[in-house]
Length: 329
Ligand SMILES: NC(=O)c1ccc[n+]([C@@H]2O[C@H](COP(=O)([O-])OP(=O)(O)OC[C@H]3O[C@@H](n4cnc5c(N)ncnc54)[C@H](OP(=O)(O)O)[C@@H]3O)[C@@H](O)[C@H]2O)c1
Image 1 (cartoon, helix red, strand yellow):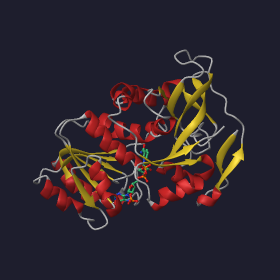
Image 2: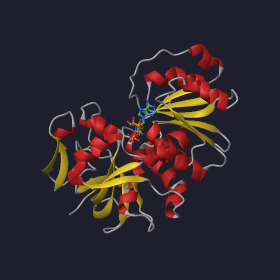
Image 3: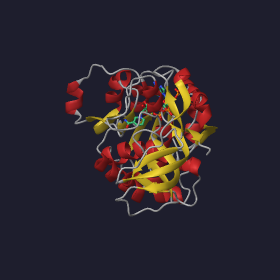
Image 4: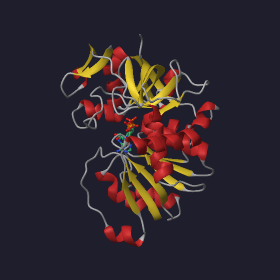
């Protein structure tokens, strides 16, 4: 089958289209004929050699797919050949065929295209897991999501608007994305390029209250500002460390304000744990996709063969929302 392989680690030049062996589903897996997949920042980090796949997962990039079930593992009873599904995969998405655990797939609602469905399982489930299941968001909260316009961030905004009432959403974004972030539901957008001390703005905006949840992928350079932005009993959830992994922390402030810092990764969780997360996402969030309350924001759709261009767009931060790769057969 056709797949994108990494010929070594490095820049976009290592991405090559190659003919590789079609994967075989384990008894509790299905084989999916991939119609579309989408690009996530972890794919780029993996391409650079800094995010190896968990043991047993495909070396091929790609964490989410949408397509048609082609073959069932011997233990799979709840799906049939020909079903249209989206899936969270530990790797292997940038290919004509991918395997997925039956417990990690979601039927595609009739109202959704393959391209839209290919955006859901990594970006939206990451946002749902961290903001809802770990962060415990509730109506009337104040939240701060860093990275306005990215895949996970736009997903977090859309899920918050669809599943809660009256949450005050604060976003940090680069100037070119600020207006669009407001359009999809942010209450306050902070230009992070001009405001490295964003906690002052947040204190003023929240009348010294602070925010209940921070979803952060920036890491080290934002730690101090994040802690200063958190309310009493606030939760800082770290899902990425693009600025570095080491920073100084004021433990006194953390203790007195009874705050929590939580690290969180989706990909390397045990199969059963991911199944539980997907089950809850299916029940609570998928109806909002089915009725078009949430429509994934697609910046562009490119053929799989143009994967290098897709990665380049993400690395330059040109995109707003998701970059989709369509797979022809
Ligand atoms: N832990 C997990 O389970 C998990 C799962 C998926 C993704 N992630 C992580 O989540 C992050 C987002 O992933 P993604 O796929 O959504 O990537 P993405 O689409 O590239 O989004 C990242 C966004 O962050 C913005 N940004 C860059 N530097 C920033 C800064 N200093 N302050 C605020 N915003 C900044 C970028 O905008 P500009 O370029 O316009 O600045 C971009 O819109 C990545 O770090 C990824 O590794 C973690």
